[in-house]
Structures are given as structure tokens and as C-alpha cells.
Image (tube, rainbow, N blue to C red; front, side, top):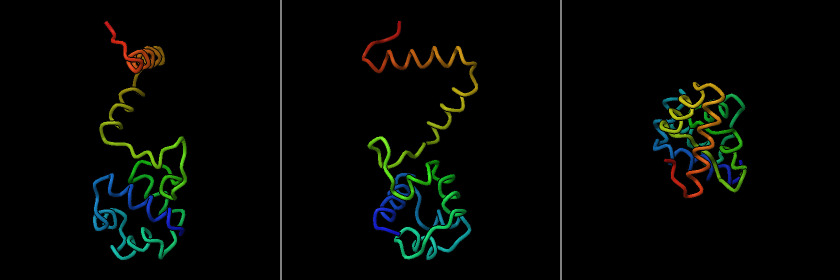
Amino acid sequence: MPKKHKTALAQIRRTAGLTQVQVAGQLGVSKATYSAWETGRAELGAERLYALSELFRCTPNDILGYTHSGRRFAAISKEDERVLDLFNAQPPSIREHFIGLMAYNAKGRRWR
């Protein structure tokens, strides 16, 4: 695994606020195994890559260190996940209204 992969996986884990021991435990592997993935001493198989992306709520490309839109990775917080769940529970017309409101506010205007 090239160095950029090691850096991406370690950064994603730290951003998630987890230790190597915690991640290894959640995946059912030893800390040594997880550490080997993070440092590039062992290759990640597709199944483990998928499990890590589910755990960290990011894409496999994020874990592998491939950039997109200028961002290194896009981990989703619990709060972000809650907002997305609430948004997805709304009918399309409410979603469009909400998107318009957010775009309006992003331009520095305030909804009244």
C-alpha cells in the first residue's frame, strides 16, 4: 500500500476519534492486523475495505487516499447522519424548499 493510503486511513481514524484498538475490535481483528493495514505492511482486501468504509461512513476511495473535489476524505458525523435521515424522510417538495433555504442562507442572507 503506498504511503498516501497509510496517511489517509490513519487520518480518517483519528478524525473519527477512534484508537487502533477500538477499530480493530469493531472489525474483529487484532490491533497488529489493523496497524499493518494503516502502515501499509498488509494489503486491505475488498471485504475489509468495505467494512472500514461502513465504519467510518466514507468511501473506499477516501480510505485509499484518492481525492475528490479537493477534499481528502468525507467522514460523516453522527449529527450529519441525523440531518440526512431527517432530510430523506421528507417529501420532495419539502426537500427542495429546504435546499433553497440553505442556499439562500449560504449567500449571507437570512430567512424571515
